[in-house]
Length: 210
Image (cartoon, rainbow, N blue to C red; front, side, top):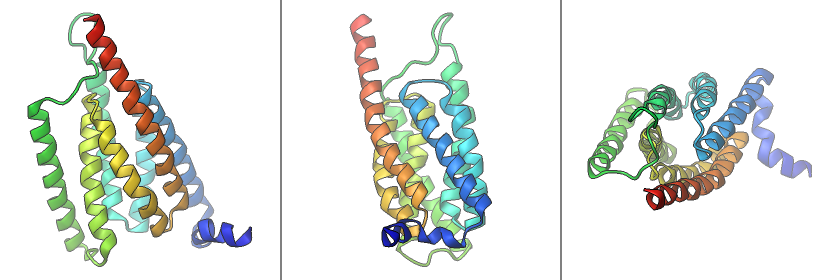
């Protein structure tokens, strides 16, 4: 039993109690945010903002620049998403769940490519381009940037990007030594799958009643 515990949580022996507590708090609010997103609930944004602020601090402290930028971007997009989700498209309706338009697909591709280049330059500038983790970080950052933008715009396809990014992040964070965060992404994967199904059902229902 001790060997199993050490395998999963031994890396935390060098961490301060405050940092461990902050990571757990950030994970709890992260779960709440993803759950509220699945429920199509506006609380996705305030809970997500609390989680991202904590993670920005922790990731900066741990020197994980790519992950830190992801969370900083999440915070900014949460402000934007909060506005979009509450913006009325007419006198009685707010922005509905919908699928991507052709223009949004083009913008998503541009965000993905621009993020790859941006993260690469940041890693090169800070001399962090040292192993394969940097390559994977760059890709997941681009995936999550697109996913967050689509979620802020209430697009069904945001869940596909979250699922792909989460599946990559599970082993990646475990390898980095952040077991709690790795478990978080495992939970995120299941919620994202159900989120996709729930949002798709909502779209189908809207089409049937239109």
